[in-house]
Structures are given as structure tokens and as C-alpha cells.
Image 1: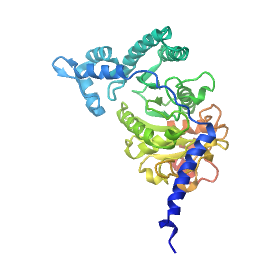
Image 2: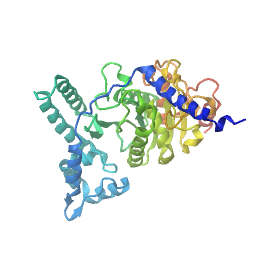
Image 3: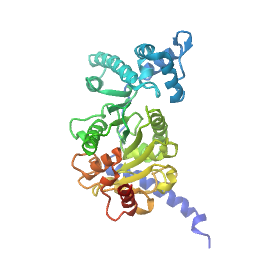
Image 4: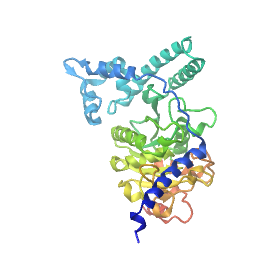
Length: 403
């Protein structure tokens, strides 16, 4: 008899499983609609071309793709005054340049935001645009104006396409611990913050976590980064069911984490598709990343935590009514993201998400999920609330109490 593994039946089943992944993803939240990618890439290209021809005295400017340590050494060598001049002359490049002093990046991004705001205000009244186009321009103008509010610290900003950004809460240069929030699908400039369902958007997530960390460890210098500096899938469709956007985002996440100033310990809090990105990034994360916590994960593109090949502790949680649990946890032909991180056999330390509701409620104040995130962020492992009967989580707490 021909074995099942060598028969055409196996290929058929693999195809059907792959289709099932996509079908369930689409059926759960609706078919993805095709959306126009607003914003041109030309400003970025023009900014990079100008930087390539720029000089400080008789010195050429460093390649923006150079390692962060090379960029940091360059800025240290030219001094604060010349650094500020570069930020003013080349705000787009400096504002997104890993290794540049963060205060210069904040300054540069404020200038870039002002330019982007002026451009969108011009589009609002452009009669050549459709009513929908003018409405989109108005929304973008409102977002840029909000990001420019006094006191906001914008670590990265790119208005091209649907846009990318990252914001810092706290003093990143003096923080002993830094928490990075990596959000999931439909993350862009317009969804970076929300008035309704505030804590489902990256800016609200960061605000909630930063406040919780300060309550947990009032004397600990911490910072939180709302990191929406990657191109996320639009809707729950084929992009969300595959890993190509996660792979591109993982490179950006590793570069950012490597470039953070000082010697702070870093924790990653990865939600939904953000956990896919974190899984892809895990093998390349710098040693300063001590914890990777995932919530509402569709998988991390591995079959076990050990396969992430990271020295960081891996934590996982999912609330009882999160629809993500209905997604098939498998990977076939590049579709799907592998095993379920909250199953005991995956090997993550399982945390309670009591109080969280649905797929986007993990950062709501008053939930076990937020309290657990805060405890990890400040290193207060003894304050964690484990999911019931999870020995790996409890061993971590016991170790903290004993140490």
C-alpha cells in the first residue's frame, strides 16, 4: 500500500489547510478591502539624495544604513551644534536615523511633521481631489498636528504611504528599563491613536503601560515606546496570514532595539500580528532584550519557544473571548504562523489576562494583562499573575522571590 505521506492526498490536504487558514482569518473579521496608499515616497527619496550630497566641513555624511554605533560615533565627533544644524537641514533623515541622539531625532521629526502638515493643509482645499481624498488629507492633517503637540517625543516619522511613526514616553536616555509596544494589523499614522477605544491604538497602549509601570515601580526610571514604525498588514487577509511584512518589520525592530541609548534593559510587548514580527525578530534581538511578551497571538512562526533561539524570557497570554483562538495554529506553504503560544507544549511562560475583553483589550487599565505587562517592564517578576497551573511562569516568580 502507498503510504499517506507519499500520496497525492497529502498535497491535497496541505492545500486545503492553507486555504482554511485564509478562510478563517477572512471570515472572522471580514474580507480585506483594497485601500489606496496615500502619500508619496518622493519626499523620502529627495531627503536621502540631499543627505548623500551633504557635508559637515570637509566630511561626507555617513550612510543612513550604517550600523547605529557608526552613526552614534559620527554625531559624537561633530558636537551638539553641528548635530542640531544637520537635524534642521535634513530632518527626515536625522529623524529616522538609528544611532543619532534621540533629542535630535525629536527635533528633526517636529520639523518633518510641520512640513507634512503644511502639505496636507494644501491638499484639504485642492479641488482636483475627490471629496474622499480631501477628507483623508484632513484626517492626516489632524494627526500630524496632534503628534506636534508640546511635550510629545516622536522617535520616528515617515508620512509615505499609510505612514509610520514611533513615540517615546519618559526619558529614553536615562531609563534603566525600556518597554516597546509592537502593534498588529491596520497600524498606520491614522490609527496610531484613537479617541474611542483609546487603549486599542499604539499611543493609548503606551500611555496605559507607562502609567501602570510608574504605579508598579514609582522610583524606577522607565520609558515606553509606541513602535508603529513598520508597514503592517491592512485588514485580516493574506498579508496578515503570511510573514513577509513581519520579516521586513523585524529588521527595523532589531535595528531600533540595538540603537537605543545607554545600557537599558528592553522588554517587547507584541500584540496580534506584532507577535509574528517579534517571533521573526527573536533570533537577532540584542542581548539587552530580556523579555518578549505576546498577547492575542496568531503564532510566532515557530513550533515552540525554544525555536525562537533567544535568551529573552518568552511570555504569552490570551483572554477567554479573544477571537484569535479560532484561527488554525499551523503553517502550510508559508500561510499561517505556526503553533499556539499559549499551549503548554509551546513552552512560553503563561500569564493571566483576566479582565481583558476581546482581541484589543489587553492594555485596558484594571486588567491582569496590563498589570502583568507593567511588572515585566520594570522587572518586578514577583508581582506577576500566572495563568492557572503554569509551572514555567510560577518557577520564574519563585526565582524572583528567591533572588
